[in-house]
Amino acid sequence: MSVVQAFLSLSTAFGLSASAGLNAYIPLLVIALVDRLTDGLMDLQGPWAWLSSWWTIGVLAVLLVIEVLADKIPAVDTANDIVQTVVRPTAGAILFAASTHTIQLHPVLAAICGVIVAGGVHTVKATGRPVLSVTTGGTANPIVSTVEDVISTVTSIIALVAPYLVLAFIVIVVSLIIWWVVRRRKARR
Image 1 (cartoon, rainbow, N blue to C red):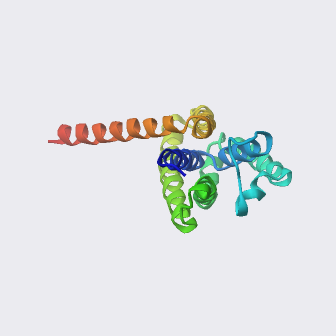
Image 2 (spheres, rainbow, N blue to C red):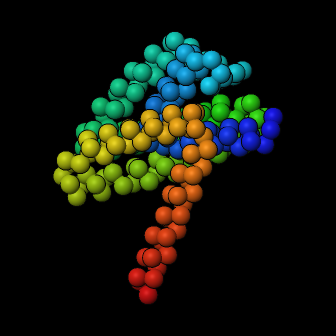
């Protein structure tokens, strides 16, 4: 395995795990369908082969419909985020481990990375959403939820098709966060 292949595998893992922080079922369903319907784009091997069974795909599709509907309703979305506090990091762990299986990354390390990435994204989402609900009277919830679902879907697809773009995106987001923090500190002084 070359360094480039390892890098692309890690980029895919980070992209899929971050996507799981917004919606656990979208990236799981994407990799399951891609593995099932394409040849070579995603190869779920060993302990991860069950993800692309038709039973798993069916269950993921039903869970996705429930998640999408629950996330659009004020107050229900907060309860959903509480439940998803366990589900999203778990999905991130599975996605990270399944994506890095080919580069022989230790499964425990991969799972920890997935939990941290998906958990971090979920934490930002789950803490911001109640504030948004209160300030907009819940009217923005369906719009923001739809945007999150689109971002999760696009990120999942990009992570599989063009993983080098995931790294560019991460660099841009981290740069913007650093810029914002520095700007706020200067404004306080």
